[in-house]
Image 1 (tube, each protein chain N blue to C red):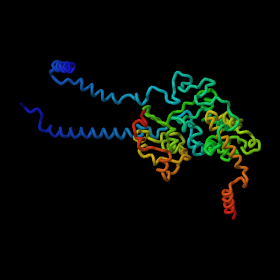
Image 2 (cartoon, chains in turn purple, yellow):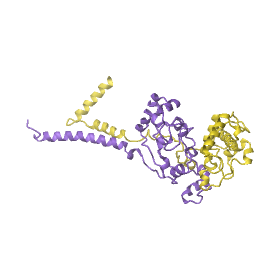
Image 3 (tube, rainbow over the protein chains, first blue to last red):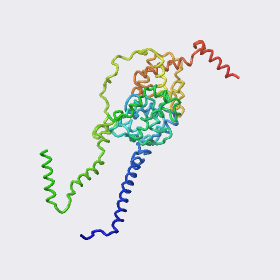
Image 4 (tube, rainbow over the protein chains, first blue to last red):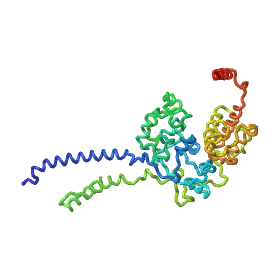
Length: 214
Length: 204
């Protein structure tokens, strides 16, 4: 039986095999990084809003508490978005002619809500409860970043499962005293383990599947 | 067992009908299955409405509906609003009131209640001081009603501040008023001594 392949094909086969293995590894690496990159997670994204609302001005400049607008944050799953009525509590008297606020005035006049764009979004298979976090020592800043420095709201955290678990495995770092929940730039608690006991947080249950997927 | 044999015979038949090469169709099906497995975000975007999610076709394209006029929440009291604090005055209630006062009232009324909050400093017409003679005499219920329904230029806060918090804030305002007219004799002996010591230290 005659030889089908030339002896040179041996080398070529080796190169192809090695190259193929390398390509698989390279593909896996690219996929791994791409999946965690801001391109995939949306970290740093600034969705366009109907009104360019500045948290920097309202939180950093005026010192208005987060809960003035996000009233549901300590009593429901959803932090709540302010209705037009809330905006107009002040803007019925301030900046009443500002072009920037025209959509707000129109919304009040026509009784039609503003369509704010969601910035921090979790997949539907995640069960998340603001109240559970806010009333147990997790400050707004831990997930939403320094909103007092954001002229336009951007997604502060990657919002990946890995990121959730980083804190669920080790919540001590993020805990604060109850009166510092909405504070911005609060220093780390001096005795996090005391806070852990105070809030009665059971770290052994915080990485169970059912904690977030139910 | 029967089905297994049938399956095998089918396989044999198919290889017989294509004797020249391997039948690659199952391989492609499996590969396509792998490729398609990553498609679609059915679990990520489930067919349900998140709070305040848009709902095209409904009024204002909004999934959240305004309750019918006169709707009573399940946990809402059906009793008429009492004229004074409906629960015992406790330290917790006052602290709750203080916290809620700082969130909702202090932007205009100021931390001290003198109507010099940050929003007033930026041009909002100043509200009357909470320490005027008229407001010091007024029943607690007045503050409850003003929070719920608004007053003058002040918008209604009833939707943002639940009934219990309204009473807590009203109680805190009363405490704030008392604090501005406190006499040295009102303090406990220990606090009085501390205050006198501090004021001595302050004066050079």
